[in-house]
Length: 123
Image 1 (cartoon, one colour):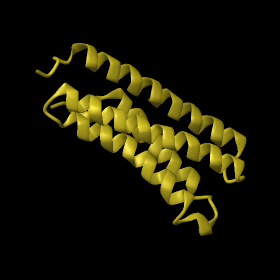
Image 2 (image 1 turned 180 degrees about the vertical axis):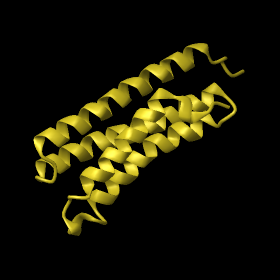
Image 3 (image 1 turned 90 degrees about the horizontal axis):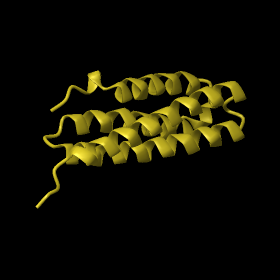
Image 4 (image 1 turned 30 degrees about the vertical axis):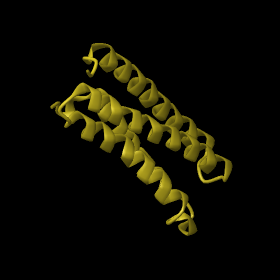
């Protein structure tokens, strides 16, 4: 069991979630149960799955939860693009949030590869 708060990838995911919550406050009110909710939930899912995986008993399980976190990061990447194209995010906000998302995706991929290299193969 690892302390998820000590994982740099979790710290970055948490920072992205806070930034997304702030950015989505300016979304139209009619999106509260639509895109605002979707992007926030997908963002929360990244950090939540990293935390849950860190609390599991094996590196194989951690890698599985990192895969799920990576999927959520892909969702966020698309939802940010959609928000930009709908005019809910300006180019500067989009670029910043997208860069954060892509950094997290790279970190998740790297961490997952490293874990899978060192994890024992199941019998």
